[in-house]
Length: 111
Length: 116
Image (cartoon, rainbow over all chains, first blue to last red; front, side, top):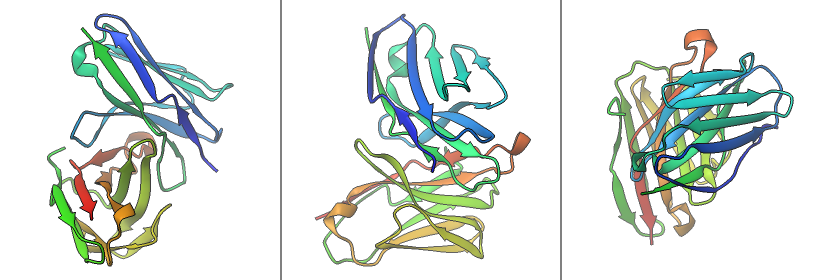
């Protein structure tokens, strides 16, 4: 079955880069997603990448995909205190019906 | 996302009571989902529906039931609430098949349920 693993906590200082890591188990054609959950709110899609891509960049966000190691990362450049949130990695497999979410990484940004 | 609304936002109830959580969406999506979130456990899928006539059990459906009253409405019921159902509940919709067959999900703001 599908399994998505993330580290639970990351602490950085404002202005530094943050890197949140995720590993997944299924090597079938898939989309991989990053969601952000701010305190008291639902999940918000940040970005996604298809498994035939190695990298995707969107403003301060860079997603790197290592298909061989089934490893996905989200880099946030110039991290701000407003980036403090829980970040979820999620996987979907083409032809399947649901997403599998990791347990989430809590990012704490200190001034 | 304001296009997906959940009511109530907070609810405290007692063991054994029946409770219904409601979800409405204006995105025009066919697919809708109910998740629960517990600290350290992430999101777990309770039920999902691909259209009004298609409802499926998720990972943790025991103790829950759902009703898809219309494309825009998907409600979750706890027939006899118990304390370990205390959690944050999220409704979501999906744009599948989105561009290139993506399955982007859009979440409501959540309902915090406490069962005493």
